[in-house]
Amino acid sequence: MSLAIMCAPTPSEAQESAGDSVMSHAKGNRLSVGGYGEVCFSRNFFSDHVSRYSQPEEHKNDPSHGKFDLPHAVIYVGYDFGRGWTFGTEIEFEHGGNGIAYEKEDEEGGEWEQETEKGGEVELEQFWLQKSFSPKANLRIGHIVVPVGLNNARHEPLNFFTVYRPEGENTIMPSTWHQTGVSFFGRAGRFRYEAQLLAGLNADHFTNTGWIHKGNKSPLEYDVANKYGVSARLDYYAVSGLRIGLSGYYGHSIGNSYPRNKNGVDAEYKGRVAIGALDFTYKGHNWIVRGQADYGYLSDASQLKYVYNRLNSRSPFHHSAFVSKNAYAVGIEAGYDIFSQIRSMRQSDRQLYVFGRYEAYNPYASKTKGTAYNYTAVKRMAVGLNYHPVPQIVVKAEYSHRFLKSIYNNEPAVNVGIAYEGFFL
Image 1 (cartoon, helix red, strand yellow):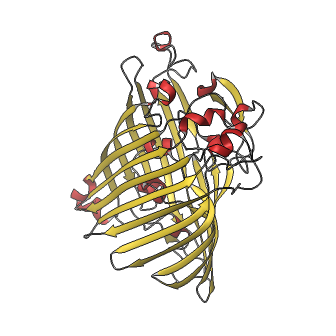
Image 2 (image 1 turned 60 degrees about the vertical axis):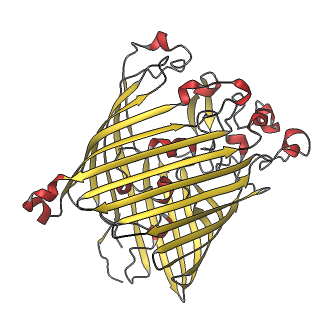
Image 3 (image 1 turned 135 degrees about the vertical axis):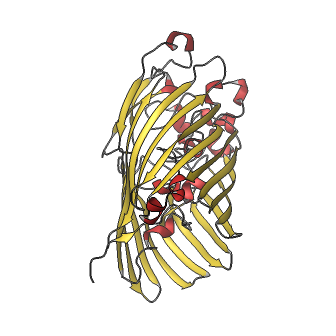
C-alpha cells in the first residue's frame, strides 16, 4: 500500500456522523489513519474565584485570567478486513494529559478533588467491529459515539465556528458522548438512520451545573450495566446543502453503579433520563448555518442526593448538590465566506468565514425541592473569524460574552485557536 495524503472534509461538505469519520477517507485502501487536534488560548475578563456566584459583589473587580489548552488531540485508525467487516478506533488525549487530574469543584464549596475518569484523560472514544450488509444495513458492536444532539454527531473542529465546542450542549450532555453497545444504521434515499442499545448512564455522576454531562463516565475498570439505555437518530437531506436531524435518548440511571444497593432510594426509584434534540446544517451560497435545540427530563431528580454512593463521602461521586429535573440548550450560528468574493482567494481554496453565534442553556432549569442555582441560566453570544489556509486547517478567533442573571457578573472572553482535521494514510 502506498502512502497518500488524504483530505479531511471541508467546511462545505456534510459529514454524516462522527462514527463514520474513522473510515470515511479510506478511499479503497484497507488501512485508514488520521485524526484531529486543537490548540487554544483564552483570556477571561471575569473572576475565577470559587465564590464568584455565591458572593458576586466581592468579585466584581477581580483581575482577568488566561489559559493555554490542548482540548483534544485525536488519532483515528480504521481497517477494512473485507467481506463487509471493518474495524475502527478513535484514541483521544484530552488537555494534553494522562492520569489523575485535580479539579476545584464549585458545586461542592470549592473543595479540591481528584477527577477520576476511566484511563485518566486518555480515552478510547471509539473501538468497534462492523459488519456491513448493504448501505441500508450496518451493524456496529463495541465502544461507539452516541449521536444525540448536533455536537455529539459532528464534534470535530471543522464542524463548529467557535474556538471551543458549542457551550450549551457541551454543558448539559456528555461531550463527546461515547459508550459501549450495539448500533444498527444505514442510509436509504435522503435518509440516514441509526438506533443503539447502550449501557445506562450513572446517576451518581449527575450534577447541578452539568446535569448528565458526566453520566457516561466510570471510575471503575469497566462500565456498569445494571440498567440500559437506547438512542436513535434520523437525518434527512432535504435539499442541496440542507440536513435536518432528529435524535433522542431514553434510559434508567439510578442503581446503575457499583456497589448496587438493594435498599433505599437505589431500589425504589428509576432516574429515567429522556432527551429530545432537533438540529440542522445548511451549507450553500458561501454560507454555513447550524442550529440545535435540546430538551432533557430526569425523573426522581429530588431523590438523587440520597442515593447510596452520593451519601458516602469517600466514594468518587458527587455528594452535596441537588440535580435538576429539566435541562435545555438552544443555539444557532451563521458564517459567510468573504474570500468567496475574491477570485485569487477562491481559486487558491482559501476561506475566511465571518461568523456569529447565539445560545441559551440551563443545566438546572427546574428548582429541585425549591433549591435555586440561578447562575446556571446562561445566554451567550460570540462573534469572530475562521480562516482556512488549506481545507484541513482552521485558525479561529472570537470575542464571547456570557450574560447571567442581573445579580451576577457577566463573563466576557477572547479566545484564539488553531485546529486541523485530516487523514494521512
